[in-house]
Length: 147
Length: 147
Length: 147
Image (cartoon, rainbow over all chains, first blue to last red; front, top):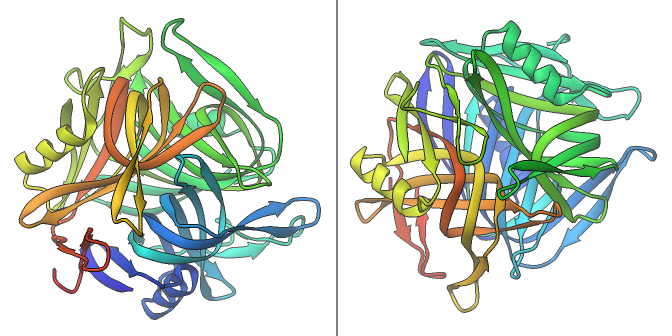
């Protein structure tokens, strides 16, 4: 994955991130966020994956059910944000995938490998966003009042 | 719903809006837009809904057909804008939902209840956008020439 | 298609583009990019199409398979970027479409006609992004190291 700062103004930074075949998306974005000290970022992306593990959050059992998609698929949309969870930047991203016949699949992004490219535009704000564990679901949710 | 101004520069403002379980999205964003005097904003969001009413615009009959989705679903993407319709800010948003099996549903957002969170990033531009009723469809569409 | 510059700061420009019934999206955005000398832009859009040709990239045969969608459909999401390919701005966009029954289709955007509107927000960064032909796939991919 290569990154480039394409705009900076008033403390807001915009990066282009370009992934190559084989790159795992969640770990590489998380690493980039740690190295670059991102604490309140948003991103959109398009590209294609060779295989993905999606998640669906079971609100009763409070766990992500895994949905494997083991086929080459277009990344029709990837929208996400980065906020601090116990001091560490954490990616939260959802994706919609396009299959060979034009039908789609989608979910919470757990893991994905790029083929041949993923083009991400990421904007870091000068402020920060913090997460706090939600008692009802056990999920770490962005808590603005706490921020 | 809690809101936080996370960036402001040259008249452009970026807000994070975080919704809680039970919040209705269209009315809360519309209220926020009125209180904050938004007249040219764009937004993206991810999260999850407990129930949604989607719309599909029937171009012949000039009405939105309602598509109820009465199940817990991931909000894979929500993209929208806010413009002035007869002086009042109006939300126009489309969503893609992810179901338990990874299949998707989507449409124009008519009404939706959040569970457990919806994370919205909204950018207000210093300019304004106005809508004008389109004679052919009866829809209020953004009219840049009129703006 | 009408365009309006709604924000400019530190070399970054944000445009609203509003399309009318019958406009072809790929050619009009490409023309706008050439006229406005865009070389590193990102965009999101919602609206509706009367007919679309989607693409799915066959990674083995190295060609886009065409997926025609010949029905009125909501544009649930359109995410894209513009970068320079051999000196000329080139649009890369993916779309998710919503059908009358709420099911979806999606793919790489090859061609689409608007009905009745498409609302695009496009941000041009002061930097530039260049593409280079990828030997393995034959695709022109954004190459940050080359930029």
